[in-house]
Amino acid sequence: MTSIFLPPPTQQIHSDIIESAGVEISVLRLDMMHPWVNGNKWYKLKYNLLEAKARNFTTLLTFGGAYSNHIFATAAAGKLFGLQTIGVIRGEEMLPLNPTLSFAVEQGMQLVYMSRNSYKQRNSPELQAELRERYGEVFIIPEGGCNLNGVLGCTEILKQVENFDIVCVACGTGTTFAGILLSLTPQQKGIAFPVLKNGGFLQQEIEMLLQNYLAADLPVSNKSLCAWELICDYHFGGYAKFNNELLKFSQQFQQIYGIPLDYVYTAKMFYGVMDLLQQGFFSNGDRILLIHTGGLQGNLGIQKRLSQ
Image (cartoon, rainbow, N blue to C red; front, side):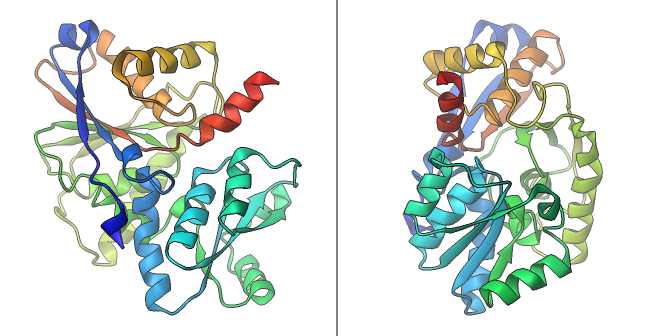
């Protein structure tokens, strides 16, 4: 299953800000693994796909917003691995379809629209039973791949990376960060940058994922967890919100380093790290690894909004 994916390269970056802070910064380019199923989305899907195949399911059903990276990746993965896909989309149908949903349909995904009130119940047994009654025996993957299979996959993100002290990642559901924490040593540290407004609630969500994972006796490198924290100051107004300052930063970053960033996740985390460097947040000699979690397809929708 993994043979179609390239091993993600690590790219070291240099600047006056980085040198003044006395740190080393490298970027793990998960965005370069595959054209469509890349970044943390692949890791969160991997063991869900394996379980679906092992249990002889032929159809995946999952949830997401109209610009969801997860919907995009699930549609592509379903086609790659011979599974039908159904995407339950939050809100009403808007025509013409945006680039994310157009791609999903091209990959064979059936789109189902759900009112925002009903969508809030997407994880309830009652709604999931209703969906199974309507669509048959479907393998349900939570929004964003947020389950223990997703966490298990994310424990493999750092498998081939060494020599760093701190890992930084953008955070939506906390699944990716939980998996990364389970793969770190007690001497290392994890920092997550929530992209949602008032993202402090993710502290409890991440703790719950970690507890449930350890209780399930799934593979783990270290049962003694490292130190970790959330930095909630770089959401730029909330999920999928941005301003000219973030757009300018992202464009300049790509020009200087040749690394494209998505405005929903990675640009916010990279901006936060660079800002913290100037504040003296990190210690001299720290080796910092930034996780590029992909999601670049989302920029197409944002660019469309900007052009209107």
